[in-house]
Amino acid sequence: MRKIQMVDLKGQYEGIKERVNQSVLDVIESTAFINGPEVHQFQKELEEYLDVKHVIPCANGTDALQIAMMGLGLKPGDEVITADFTFAATVEVIALLGLTPVLVDVDPITFNIDTAAIKKAITSKTKAIVPVHLFGLAANMDEIMDIAKEHNLFVIEDNAQGIGGDYISKDGSKKKTGTIGHVASTSFFPSKNLGCYGDGGAIFTNDDDLAHIIRGVVNHGMYKRYHHDVVGVNSRLDSIQATILRAKLPNLDTYNKARRDAAAKYNKAFEGIENIITPTCSCSCSSEMKENCVLHVYHQYTLKIVNADRDALAAHLNENNIPCGVYYPIPLHLQKAYLDDRYKEENFTVTNQLVKEVISLPMHTELDDEQIEFISTTIINFLAK
Ligand SMILES: *Cc1c(COP(=O)(O)O)cnc(C)c1O
Image 1 (cartoon, rainbow, N blue to C red):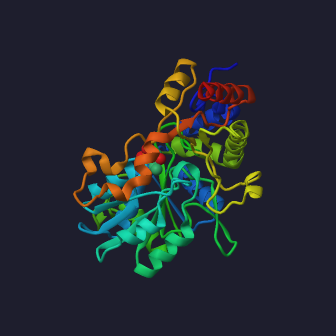
Image 2: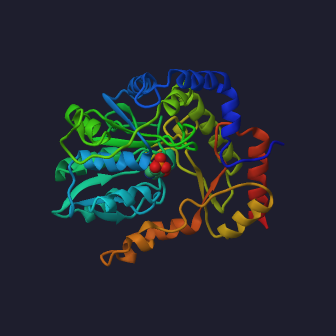
Image 3: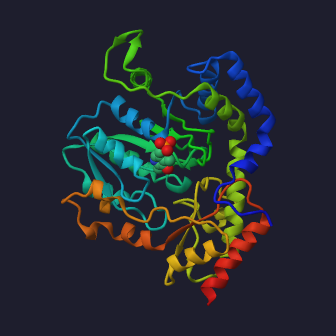
């Protein structure tokens, strides 16, 4: 059996090696390293893929979130509601801009922001909601957009883990994640579903005016050379990363399908195991749809281990050379940097529980049946003891 990896970037590279190598060499020959034609082409191709009017490439997914908030003109003191159960980047940029992060609990089934908790957290200072499509599953965007409309709030989708995923609204229309809110951010960190070979990110929006503002913000607040109209940042996707992303974008649907196929095999292997709760594929899926559900892109395949020792299981997997991860081991509201007297433990019962139960298994485009079989059997045998 091949060595099991949490993410297998090398195996994926083998499949696109010739195109990647040639296009990287071409960029080097062209010396158009910054803002070259490759960046522009990638932007166009991603706009087309997502069916969104504007993609603004930038340096990484954390910058993308920050720039989206700067573009919306959020000001110190404005409150921004986001999920307690996510990667820290989401809350970090809120705090960095002097905005007030308001963390709220998540749904125990989807792991995504709890819309009832959003409603409870809204005050006269609330300006935006940041749903995170955690682990590759869209948050409940219908309800979030309704809440935002009612209270006149911006919605900034953190799509770092969800790229390529779909969301089906209650009216039946299907949209790509990251194209539903007012603006969205994504990351091209190597292990993300569409990853480059370094750092990269992008902002998406259908709003022409906002896109214009953001194009200036990413470039030192310049709209005309050496005229700095707003305070900006320097955040660029370089041409080498863009050309690698151009090689990978045509494969994104195939890559996401490979992840879904692996998830389906894990799901099947864990059927009927009482200590394991497998991930749901959508907030609205019937069990019959579950078989061929195409909404989730499984950035992570995350189980809940109930009435069993999750940490002992993780240690056992590591002893058997099976990598695994706990995303995330500490809720954000308990992180030193983000403590706030206003938080009450009784409002975080779900995240407080999830951090004890979740475990993410190897998930990438190159997993084979033998590896999935070995991983699932090792887990099931351990839990049977
Ligand atoms: C990865 C990630 C980010 C940050 O992206 P970087 O490119 O690493 O800056 C932000 N939010 C979430 C949910 C992420 O998973």
